[in-house]
Each structure stands twice: as structure tokens, then as C-alpha cells.
Image (cartoon, rainbow, N blue to C red):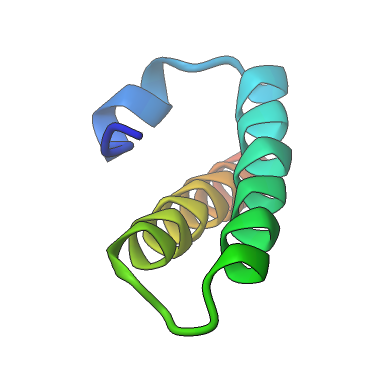
Length: 65
């Protein structure tokens, strides 16, 4: 899985961001089932989810203004 960068998220459509978020959450669940400890893959998935949520919330704030 490649790193998900903030500038790449900016190029995505709103619908694509939501789909990617669902996909990452599912893969995080699957990764946690297969491994008992947090490994590098789990950490990367969590960071990508955090980036998506942060971008999503910042877009909501911009829309309100």
C-alpha cells in the first residue's frame, strides 16, 4: 500500500474520498485480525485514515464560511 499524501487527497473527488475511507477502515480491521500487535502496515493505515478525516473536516469548515 502506497502512502496517501495530502496533495493526492486534494485531487480526489468527495465521493472518492469517502470510498477510500471505507476501504481503509475495512483493511485496518482485516490487518488487526491477522496480527495481534500493531505493525508498520497498521500504523500506515491509521495515518492515512487520519489524513482523510482531517481533509474531509477542513473542507466542511471551508464550506460553512
